[in-house]
Length: 272
Image: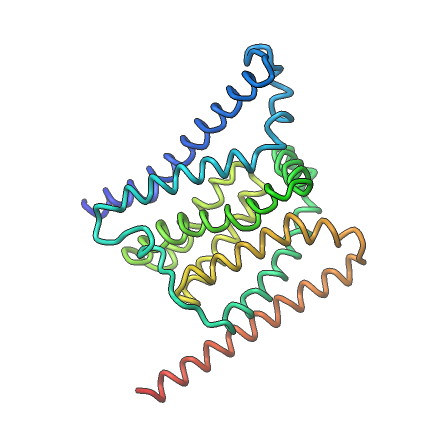
């Protein structure tokens, strides 16, 4: 019963709290926008609301993340493990980081092809696409997307939720549940699908590196490719060449990760 209660709090209520905070922050932003521009919220056309929010969506997200991070620090303060301890910021092997980075770069490139092929069928993804385009014109928003958001999301989803799940449940169940929550929290079907897949990958990276540093590097790199590098180069390179590069990067990353894992196992066996 105690385990069920903790599951409800950590896996259900904390994500809901995050959604609630994001909604409140968004509402406060719109209120501030209306005051600054001397317009009434009632006079804003609901159909134009999305276009008003889109250029600032990642700043709003940043504000929500900061509030949620402070609440998480306070929430875990009276417990045996502080937020930082739960996140497991251990020293991570540079080789491991390089190899997982190769795979993540390839995965981000393949994901961009997938999104490009199916995005027209998901109108809800248009806001995400527009927000990413708007963010490319702002250094601050680019920093938020590439660095700050990935750090918070890894602390929350892998550091808090996944770390608790893998200690208390079967590892497969833990990986799937945290990835499912990660996907749902992105708020639209298409982004939710690839966020679910990337959530599984990030969980496996967390297990492989046994450190949140590996996750943060991988997530930052994924967002960098999705928001900056891919939009710059995808239209300038042959799609076949692009696909081959992506597949090769994924293949090299996987092979190197597996070989390093085997080497680690051999070294552990020899030390015993």
